[in-house]
Image (cartoon, rainbow, N blue to C red):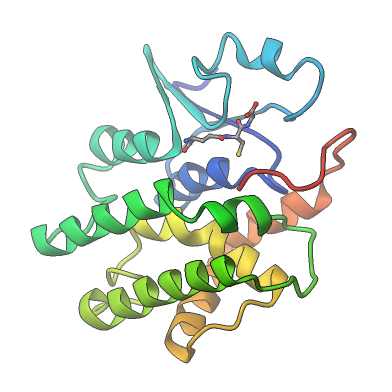
Amino acid sequence: MSSTRLVIGNKNFSSWSMRPWLLLRHFDIAFEEVSVALYQRNTAEKLGPLSPSLKVPALIHHETTVWDSLSICEYVSEALLDGRGWPASPRKRATARSVCAEAHAEFPHLKKDWPMNCKARVDLFVSEPIAEEIARIDAIWSCCRRKHGAGGEYLFGRFSIADCMFAPMAVAFNAYGALLSAEAQRYADTLLAHPAVQDWIAQGRAEEEPGVPLGLVM
Ligand SMILES: N[C@@H](CCC(=O)N[C@@H](CS)C(=O)NCC(=O)O)C(=O)O
């Protein structure tokens, strides 16, 4: 058994699972993927010994279990990356932490009505709250690229946890035809072209999900 195990849900729609998975993959950290199909009769029973919240993702590293996507990313950065998960400059790091907290806690309408789904390809209705949330994400992406993006193609130049936190939104925007500014669209295209994001999407598309309800959480 590997000393680093990441418990994830279905790649097709488990956006929270995608975030730390992408961080581990980007930084070439060896880990074992433990997949638990969500919304099945035995899901809670399978997650019981692996995740205290009975949700995914959870990371099991030696004797330590960490759950919740952002906590896992923080832990990976600290324990396995010498802090390289975050930008090196304190100013960039402060903004990166702020936008990650926002991605984690906000955007309730997108999370409910525009959930990530790797198989989806349909133009969805843009309600007023959805338009407002897309506009806020567009502003975050454009502003971070403009103010902090020198030295790379990502939000803070080189790849960081912030890119992991927003990757599922890029997948959803692409699937549902969100209209973005040129700057934000360029960043979304960069995320979508990341080899690990491509792998995640391809594997998500190949999954079969018996009994999964429509309209899943993001
Ligand atoms: N705040 C948590 C959210 C985790 C979450 O809601 N995960 C979903 C799948 S993407 C889940 O496990 N759902 C199963 C359930 O709610 O029973 C995080 O950031 O990891």
